[in-house]
Image (tube, rainbow, N blue to C red):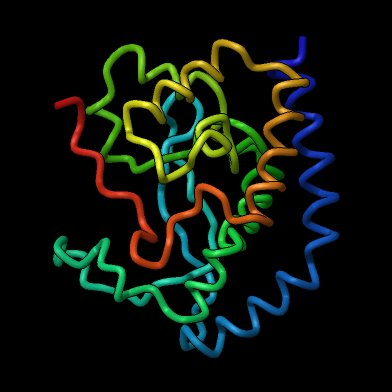
Length: 201
């Protein structure tokens, strides 16, 4: 009964409250990034949602632009701006995804939406992570975020899909708040982005 009907209601109510409470912070960040990023405070990217259906995820823009053909620099840490590094450090770049939750693209808790190009690389078990809406945070995030391997991350994602419940979501949200404040499991400046997944090799 909790999933999906009650889960969706809970998502909408909590994300609306969260967005309203964080609106002063959101406005300040937008003003800063309008200056730093020359009028472009937002980052939009297509990600797979429930059942792999694409949607545009919304984040604060924390990296400089790059030629899309230059694959070698896509994950170059030098592209992260100083303000972007601060925003990432406290996970503030994820705040705008509350809009995605309000729209129904995402849930507060669920497997993180990864890149569209990863879709053909999942095996049958890993693909189960798309059986529900992706989340702003999830079981893999509170278990280590970017400090754990891809295989372990997918294992946690699938476990969550098989065990989703109101109490589990509540636990994950509490652990997420704790980890944001103590910055546990968040990559250091030297390892601020997760390496590209190349499939099950």
